Length: 95
Image (tube, rainbow, N blue to C red; front, top):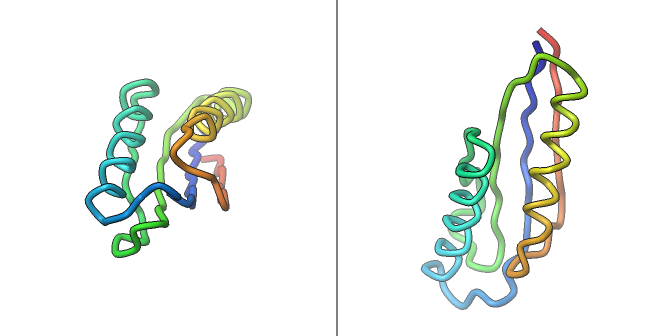
């Protein structure tokens, strides 16, 4: 079994307040959760209104399955036109 963990840091240029930032982050988290049925959280930068960070994890029985799903999730995130991805950190473990 393989476990993937990933953290994505991004900028939200059009955000003018924490309320607007949280709206963008919540929308992104809900989109990922509903499409991929994985665990996703806001993992940092909670008090910054121009910057966000989300983390997610999931399991698969194969390395190929992990790689394919991770690519699709990151593609969905990068297609979000309200954000610009700054950094992606991920780790894959085999158990």
